[in-house]
Length: 284
Image 1 (cartoon, rainbow, N blue to C red):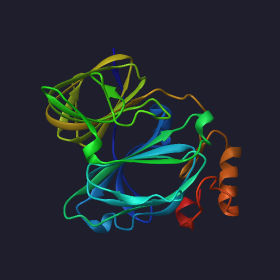
Image 2 (cartoon, rainbow, N blue to C red):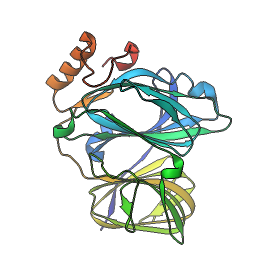
Image 3 (cartoon, helix red, strand yellow):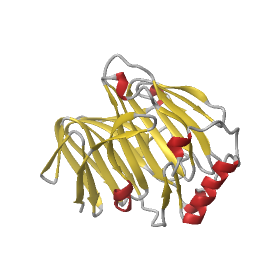
């Protein structure tokens, strides 16, 4: 049976070149959320809070998943990809051996908001070739139940699979709108639920927006809500050592130091073309 291990609320922080966002978890909470490293809820009705964006910066050893609810973010990377992540779109980026990219939000007439999830890569996958995949809103698979509408960002539900199936890590990631009861029996050991809007109830515990709950135990999960929306994210822990330096996550300090040495020497990019970095942003 599932139980509640931890309940946390978001913390306002400044990232990138000056983007105000809500950090759901990261850094100190990492051992509890393995294989997930970080979850940010970004956005604001005030463009001044986000327009400075995330200039050119590196990643290695992880995957980042950007999911836009409302608004647009321009993207470019060292693989030569360029484009705009629009409302409802997903960007799944495997940093692997190394990628340099930038994410620059555009001014939006309304409450621009989205999420970025960092997923740790297994030791054997840390140095795989980087890869960028964009999924437009029209290609996102939706499962409709009598009391809920579920967008499948990753994983499967009721025998239906998300459009992305060749993932490096076995992840379930759903966006759930609920008016009733949502039940899901997952084999994943790490399960977290983040409330986007409204309120939900898990095991008689009421949670409102900007609350995140980490579940323990095993088996079925039951969530109740009259009119709530939440992210459901699940995966199995890697149980591997973590050496974390800013946007780079490896297994040992030696590997981490090597990555930053390569950045300084201009040999960081193994696939694609290197670009000029915003050094203050990536410095460990």
